[in-house]
Structures are given as C-alpha cells and as structure tokens.
Image 1 (cartoon, rainbow, N blue to C red):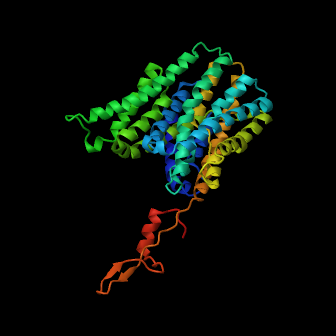
Image 2: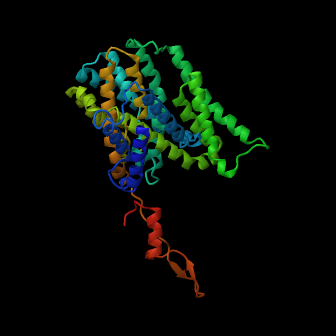
Length: 431
C-alpha cells in the first residue's frame, strides 16, 4: 500500500505539472523515475524493492506489452506497405551497427568478456520512443519521421529478444529456471506472431455476426478484451507476448479502423498508466550503490551509447534515403532505451551468468540516463517542426451587396475570435 500511495502521489503531481511539461524540458517520465528513487532504500526507505522482486518483472512486462499494443495500432498494414523502406533501413542496418558498436565499447571500456559484451549490446539495441512522446505524438512532426520511430521501436524489441536469449545461454546461466535453445526461441516467436494475427481477426469476425455487436459506450472495451486475452494466452502458452502485442495492434487497426478509433483514448491512457507504474518501480532500483558500482569506463560507455553509437548507426543506415537531413538528425537522436531493455536486463540478472551483475549495472544506468536525456529534449526538438498559421481568404464583394469568399492579393487580418480558435488548434504555431 505504501507503493500504491507513492504512485498516486506521483501521478497527482505529474497531472498537475503536465501542462508545464508539454511546453518545456520538464518530463513526467523523469518525474516518476526520480520519485521511485527517492522512496527506495537508497534514500527515504519507504518501499523495499530488489531486482529479483516479482513486482519488478511483472510491471515492466505489462508496461511493454501495453505500449506495444497501442503503438501497433498506429501502424496499419496499408500505410506500412507504402512506407517500409526507412524502417527496414533502421532495423536491417542501423540496429546491427548499434548492437556491434555497444559490444565493442562494453568490452574495451568496461572489461566484460566478449559474450557478455555482445549481450549488453543486444539488450540496449531496442529503442522506445514512448519516452519521446512529443516527437511521435505531435501531428506537426512529419508523418514519415513518426512512422519510422514507431515501426522501428515496435519491431526491434522482438528482433532483439532471440539474440538476447541465445547469448544468455552462451554465457553459461546457472539459474535452474532459465532454458533457451534455438527451437524454443523459434516456437516462442512464431507462437506470438500467430496469436497476434489470429485473435484480433477472430474477434473481428465475431463482431460481424448479426446477433452480436457492442453497445456504443462499450465499444472501447472490445480491443481491451482482445489485449487481455492475448496477454494471458501468450503467458499460458509460452508465446512471445511483445511480438504478439505489436502485431495484434497492427492487425486490429487494419481490419477494424472503427475499433481502433474508439479505443485510442482509452488505450493511450492505459499505456501512460502502465508506463508510469513501471518507471516508479524501476526508479526504486536506482540506488546510490548501483551508480557507485559502475566504473569510470562504464560511464564513458553510457555516454557513448547515447551520444555516438545510436546517432551514428542510424545516420549510416539512412544514407541516400529520401528523409531530409533535419529529420534524419532527429530520428538519430531519439533512440531512448526503454521497457524492452529493462525486461531483457532483468533476464540477464536473473539468469545467473558469471558477469551478470556487472552487465545489469551498466544496462540500468544507461536506461536511466537515456530516459532522463531523451524525455527532457523531446519538446524543444518537436518545436523545430513548426506549423505556420493558415491565412484565411478575405471576403470579396460579389457586386450584389453580399460579401463572397474568394482570394485576395493581400491576406486578411483575422479577428480576435479567429486568432483564439487558431491558437487552440495550433498551440505550437508561431505568433
């Protein structure tokens, strides 16, 4: 109950400051991270959470599933078919470059063996633009940039997971609960994809049965019921829940756009709540001792991961693409580490590999630094993509004494009411 009270207090403060955060460098994500750290054993000692506490893995897992499910709804197959090249570049070239670059930095600066170094690279390769919501959530940001970040973050989690599991197995896990083999990993991914495609299609077919149908006020609960069933089915069958979540969201948006539209407000709220809860719990793990355990080389590795490795790898992958230079730089900068890295980092720690604790320390500090830096810079960067206030055509006399709408050589001066309306519709427009 102390943890629930802390979450409620942090949520209240976040809501009260959300207006200020939407137009400044203040970040609600960072607020929950700091709140979790303050109430943990490292500071006030109000809650007692360790990396092996069940609530840590549960909240991170649920948050990642929820975020991927809602993100998938923003990527319908119809739009993906027409704009797949840039995400394919980021996933096919940018992600492997970041993976190898992080492994090299980890080995030479932190001193971990090659297997564990590549494991750290695989854990930190996925990105999570949920911590840069002002970029992916603002309509003034070009659609192809938002789609690039959304598709990349949605697919790279599932692509990194098999590599993480194989490398954990190669590093020599000592935990009796960990078992990973190539056939097992393949079955998990295939099962997640099958469930993620089949369940939304089945629900859509049920809705079209003449005697069935959702009442208007209950329609938003239909995708929610689908997500809950999918989450349970994945964990009961051992299928990969993250690939299932993203594919289910994309399938749902494609076969039932009206369901996606009705669920969107509820889905965004649920994603925000799960994200905040996971950040509070993860923040409780960020004790002074954890930061003290990381060597100087580890901090250099963290800085290089954020400032060099991700930006350079994505810029290389986008060479000769049709995205202009400014959009490339923004996409390269926003590669925050998020819930996928938290979940995979906990897998590394709980597997009991020889250098698992050192690897987890580096991963946790890198995630915390990435959340702090990226979630605080999204609003200033989003403002680079300004929206000009549209000029309204002025009334023109049609010769019969009644003004008619038509073009003029000089723009009309809007009235105060018009200016107020435009200000509401375009809050980030220039004066």
